[in-house]
Length: 177
Image (cartoon, rainbow, N blue to C red; front, side, top):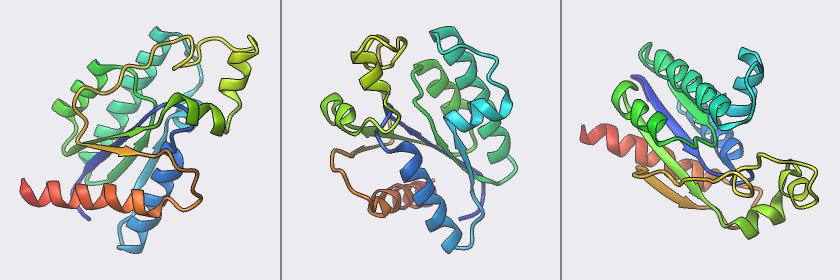
């Protein structure tokens, strides 16, 4: 895969964004592409965690991530962003500014997410030890028009098939225009 693209993988905490993005990176490397992975949490730490996790801080961080991804894609990088992506205005910005933008929504029910809970966020929120948890006390607004919606309800260790489905969609959309 050549020419720049931004693959924006979104969903709630525990939906599998980072895991599936890493699987897609491995598949792209096997194709001979050197992709860039921008994980939302890691990106925040890398650029300085000077923002809060309140809606205003989350919005500013989302714009930072979107701008950086677009910047890399304009240099012909394949960029995978694994991010919660709460804001329709950021998704709209991506559609207008990223060279080739593909939005993927990992849809998982809250019951399944609380059962997975890899970071312990949902458990801490239920115990009253954490606030600002998206999907619990902060609303999660689903993307308006994702290019691809993937259900990820199963607890599977191998998500390669989901990563491949994303890459197949990207290849097809690029071939069409």
